[in-house]
Length: 162
Image (cartoon, one colour):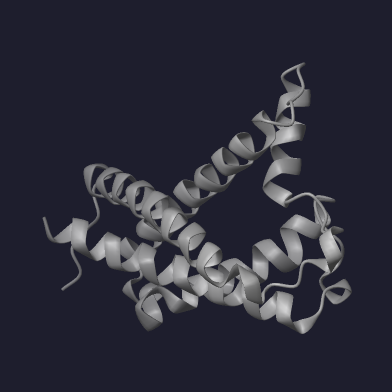
């Protein structure tokens, strides 16, 4: 028998997902720092990170601009905000459909990589089209997002047990 989900259940799931998404964003950053030497750097000509470009756009909408020292911090804030939102959505989705946690969150990470890296970011004009990048960039992004998805699920499960 399936238990009916209450507003309180969904609120708890969303809050749990926010915490899980923040933790997963941290772990993803650490993972990228640890394996970053595998990511091609295009001889120092790499474009500004999409998160920093997004932060610039938010600042423009607010009628201000970011300085060189503020840009990386604001970009990181965008990264964590997106992670928190994705975590909340994921946790709520798993309340309705436990199979959303397939592969211990790996499927969530794969879908996140495909949708964000290959659709949302390029359509928003924050990166070139997916085919403009070498395969190693896609592998790096996919691995990073699998780490994100699996960490989100591990933290979500840990918190939901309490």
